[in-house]
Length: 89
Image (tube, rainbow, N blue to C red; front, side, top):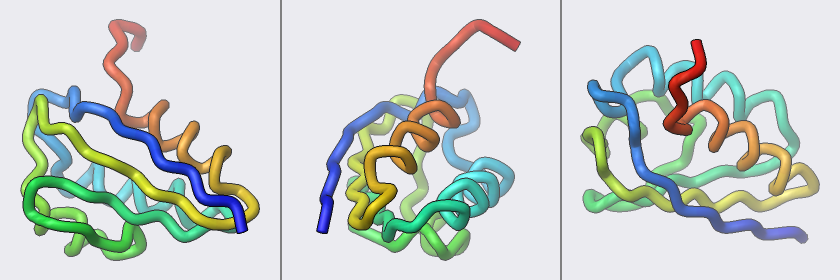
């Protein structure tokens, strides 16, 4: 089984709030992979919006995503796109 691990910084000025957590869970649900997020408060499964919010991830926080499954690389590419710092609208 393929396992992919990537780290990124939370760039959103409001951190990972409810809308971002919801979008994150929605994106992940479209792939055949299990994704976990690790922050300073621990590790949670990304299928639970409340679990994601429990990490209290603020702007600048370093997080690690671990994906396991056939779509592991693809799902983390999509996650990085959601959380990336860009000036594009």
